[in-house]
Length: 254
Image (cartoon, rainbow, N blue to C red; front, top):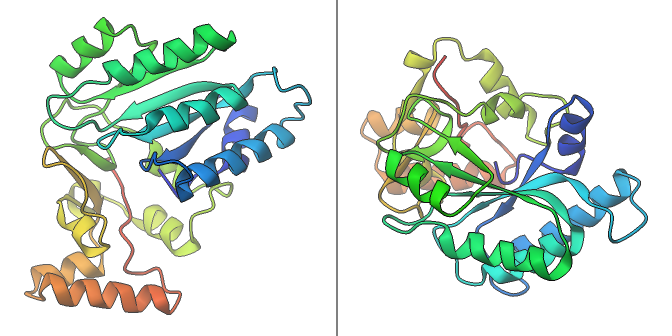
């Protein structure tokens, strides 16, 4: 949930007895804005946790979208520096597993005596077998009822991440939270479609992924015959005015 999680929210999850995660992004180029922000966020997280020694582990995890993994070693350097407790890998390109990234993490662990757990999100039996063969620590099995991006074909389990967006600790805009809270029958109020990304110009995902979101103004406009170009323009105009009502709100079926 890149953009909807931060170290305060992760810390709140930890205090409640869980393991808090933040979104690390998908741009691994040196000095990418996402990696610069990740480094700052993890530094702040260490301060919030009261960690004074650089060798103390940071009890939060970081999740990454991996369909464009070039430069992932730049992310690993930051993760090792802050000694995060867990790394979550998800959404590789079709027919490509996470093996090379897992090995990169394991090599960094050996070189620095860094104890971290590797989570890999899967949506097919084949992907699960590959992850097990790679020696990952945790399988996250996501299915077609999950909120947000997912395998176009997958198992019947769901991710609860969208539920956390509605919490007080989440930095998401209030209108997004209210949209999630007010939605009732997910089978009627949500829909799986690649259009959710098209509307907000985030349609960079490989073909095997789509996403489930609350049916909003943009989707309704599209179904009424408004062209994608016009819907995108309306979205951009709303964002320039500081309005969130056209933003995609990822959600799951309940």
